[in-house]
Length: 109
Length: 117
Image 1 (cartoon, rainbow over the protein chains, first blue to last red):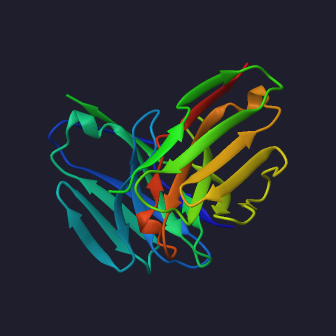
Image 2 (tube, rainbow over the protein chains, first blue to last red; image 1 turned 180 degrees about the vertical axis):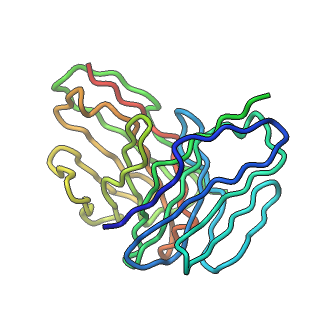
Image 3 (cartoon, rainbow over the protein chains, first blue to last red; image 1 turned 180 degrees about the horizontal axis):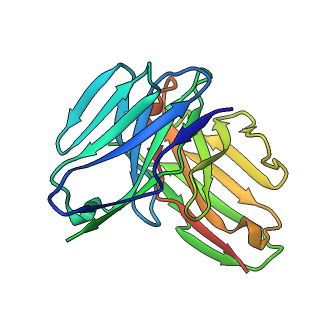
């Protein structure tokens, strides 16, 4: 079966750095996406990785290792508004999006 | 960026009634729209893929006679939950893409929270 694993919940301090991991086992791979979802709202796109390596976009960076079936989302200089759920999703060989359950990130002052 | 709207943003209805949710792409033509459902503390679950002018493709386990999808134009898709029951209470989200399939450019609507009493 297809499976995406993320930690259920993480806590971090304002101004710090946090890394949210995502491991996947899917039938084929055509890219991995990270989304941010605030409570009661729809997801918003953060990043897309299809090649190995680190993609940096402001305070957020996303890393991919296809051989390890592993990705992480790195958030720097955390702000209170970063409190949200972060969803990892993989595009499989049929170009279907397989969603992880999401990681709830709690930021404390 | 592209904007997708949903209406209503929330709805409360009695068990047995039908509810229609609209999804509109405001500034682009959406050749494909997706309907998702999300229960509390769970991941997004794809319900169906809708292409303009053709029948929707439903995911396994989703009743097509209960969740009617119509994608009559390039800017509008509707999801009708027929004879809704309390277990249908959920957060329904649509998303849209234009042109060729490109999942990194899937634009989400704000979602509709359905509560069935």
